[in-house]
Length: 344
Ligand code: KG4
Ligand code: ZN
Image (cartoon, rainbow, N blue to C red; front, side, top):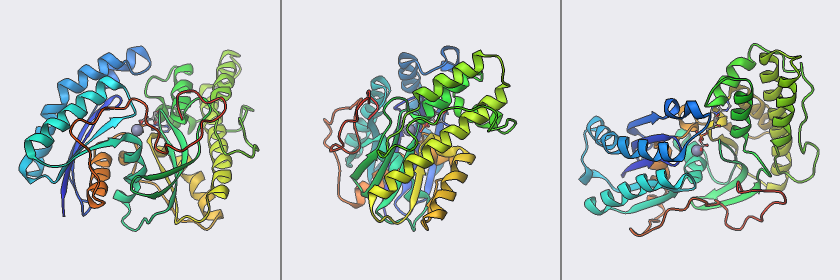
């Protein structure tokens, strides 16, 4: 049994957690910066980095207090080392290095996406490798086969926007504020998802990749036409996004070979309609479906601590001079996709 401290600071959530290798979350804290960024309609890197620097140290002390353990009781320290906003990543990684040196325990410089990818195994002890993972967050939209700790094969990615980004942009167009995903989901409940004929980009294509830029533009045109209620736009957008995801995921699953389960992770996995559609897709294919509880889907430090536990068990760690990586694909072998910007 080991205990790992996890630190997350790659975007606009400052978080710390202590997780034991028997899957107990001993303590966790998370502070969102939504209010600081709301006036700008998106995350401002300088504001984020300063907020992480102010909040992280007291937060780490608080999780130690709550769990009733000391630095010397730790078996490893894990921090997100990328991808993400470099200022925030540095705050977390430098803190982790200092603590790892003080405690004389291994440092785990983690890929944030690896945290999301392994989080389903924290929630579900029965989940075995290899599993199919749909990773849908504010910065990413990928389908991966998770073959083991540190072994990820990417089958699909977005050629333009991430899915969470499409939700956030739709929210901005409809004046719902930031972060947009939960607000769009709430408003969509009051709307008719067939009210507006929105496009389903790439649906029917033989390659499993995603595209959401055209859908977002269609949402903007629908809004500007003045013909439609905001709730109908939200519902129609959400349905179009779900149709894109299930179609594209189906193609990726066909290419992937046998897997033990279909798993969804990342912030958009908190969306109940998305989960229901993925459950139906998995049922059709006779695959078990798993989604971590919503609090483990959005950015948090328990998933980073858990990925640290998994790496500890497999004997992996990083040197104290390891560098932060603002860009860091989970599958280094993945081919760049035509039309893809920086989001691969
Ligand atoms: O994983 P996450 O917390 O941060 C990143 O690593 O990006 O994902 C945040 C994204 C945001 O775009 C947010 O709007 C979206 O997840 N999101 C949702 C919901 N909750 C969060 N999208 C749709 N429905 C939701 N309920
Ligand atoms: Zn994330």
